[in-house]
Amino acid sequence: MLRIERLKVEVGGKEVLHGINLHLPKGEVHALMGPNGSGKTTLIMTVMGFEGYKVTQGRIYFKGVDITHLPVYERARMGIGLAFQRPPVVRGIKTRQLIEMCAMGREVDVEEIAAALNFTEFLDRDVNLGFSGGEMKRSELVQLMAQEPELVLLDEPESGVDLVNIALLGRAINRLLGRELEPQEGTSLKELRKRYARSALIITHTGHILDYVPADKGHVLINGHLVCSGNPEEILHTVEKYGYEECAKCLR
Amino acid sequence: MSEVKETLPPEEDLLKVGVDPSEDGRIGTFVQEDDRVVSCGVRQEGVDLLSTRRALERFPEVRDYLWRALEEDLALGEFQDGYFIRAHRGVRPVFPVQSCLYLSREGMRQHVHNIVVVEEGAELHVITGCTSRARRGTHVGVSEFYVKRGGRLHFTMIHAWGDEVETMPKTGVIVEEEGVFISDYICMHPGRKVKMYPTAYLVGPGATARFQSVLVAVPGALMDVGSRVYLRASNTRAEIVSRAVSMGGAIIARGHLVGESPHVKAHLECRGLLLREGGLIHAVPELEGRAVELEMTHEAAVGKIAREEVEYLMARGLTEDEATAAIVRGFLNVDIMGLPQPLQEELDHIIRQSDQESL
Ligand SMILES: Nc1ncnc2c1ncn2[C@@H]1O[C@H](COP(=O)(O)OP(=O)(O)OP(=O)(O)O)[C@@H](O)[C@H]1O
Ligand SMILES: [Mg+2]
Image: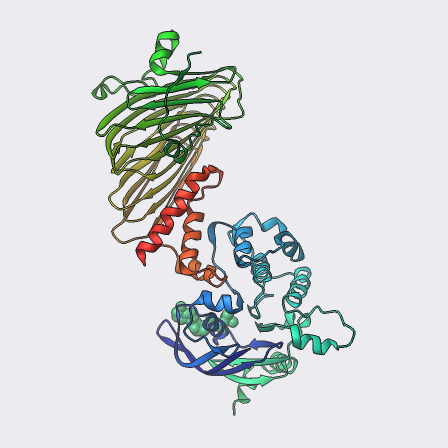
């Protein structure tokens, strides 16, 4: 689904990512962890293609297509969706309108997806204007649910979200990923997942969201290097107990 | 009531400035073409609509409303005509009265004097569309509005002028106790020059004024537009909001709030977007406090569209042009405005045009 090769990225004239290799197969969920400022947001913003993130080396492939230099909207239309860590305020555009735009002409039931995220009362407010931290996160997810991307990039989706809403958020992400499947006759759930499920790269510090959306793999990014890939629970456990220094040792 | 009904200017010209010749959802219509009144009639009990000259002949009290909300300007000379609209005590029509001031002959100087009176407890919505077939000409529009105790006047004005028309409206408004005056001004085709500084005087306790302006200047246009409110009585409120977009033209967006009594509250907001090289937006917000315990604030911001916002929408699948257009439309969408449909389309057209030109 997503393959990143030897990726180097500059932000504001400074190299932030120093040669990243990452493979996210179809149907899998990967967690991306690492200390503040290590380059996690930079990595997914680069996958989405934003202007300020300059690729100086390496390639990004999505569904086998080299997208390294495609404009943002083409990537979105190919099926990449991003929930921002800090989305901007857009005055004069109602959240409802934006959600409709996200659907790109497909029929969506805005009321229904908003209700699923306890978000109905925010539909008629300007995009992100005066939203609390948790409200912004839910807004981002409602938009993605209308957009229905195949690859979902989530930048700290649970930060600032209260416990009740985290559960809603978790359920919504599973729905977005096609993981809320019922077993069917003649085929296993696992098989079904392979056929339908979409992929996700989730940035998380606490790992709370992984309680609801189990990750297949975890990656640790430190100072612009991917230092470790492996079982996400083990990584979280190690970081919690010994800090990121221990993870850094993996590199050797 | 005197009914005038002659041939109207072309329908598309009228619709563009919010005037509907079918009179659907309107209680009356007034149209002046150059110096002549070509349509004047009202279908609502308790509402008068006459040309100003007729009104002066018919009702002696109208003379008292001449040059009371404005300082007399002899330099302007004799006015040709204009409209007189009055909502009698307690009358509250559901629909607006519409009026059109139309410049048809090349090089014409149109000079009108309008008077609107909203008596105690009455409510009125007046839509005035000013437009031209002529490319060249001058429009001098003098308007005096009187909102009596507990009355409410909503005045919507839409300007769409030919390329070389110059306009100098003068507007004075007097609002009495608990009265409300709301002005919505939309100008997307200012011609060569629009210069105006309507002024409201809140003379009774609890009176309110709100001015909203949406201004779009194409290259070659100069708009010098402001609103001014004198808060003369206690607990009066005022709000001035303007949204200016330069597509290469120049906009001076002024605002002036004068607090002359304690316990008044007023806010001024000027926001400008510069979309193309060569444009100018000059925001001039002024606050003048002349009493204790008043609260007056202002906000002004001039800039280009934030890249971050454009990219945010692009991440949802919009092209750069679509994202830009959506943001500009949102920027200009001063909520309560209720832009007439043809005008909304016109606005989209202007934005699209600027997108193409900037490619
Ligand atoms: N526009 C910019 N100009 C200069 N430096 C930047 C810019 N954007 C990001 N950086 C720097 O790049 C580095 C990586 O930032 P990034 O936002 O990717 O970190 P992160 O891993 O997402 O951190 P956090 O966990 O705090 O969200 C940081 O040192 C940051 O200060
Ligand atoms: Mg980050």
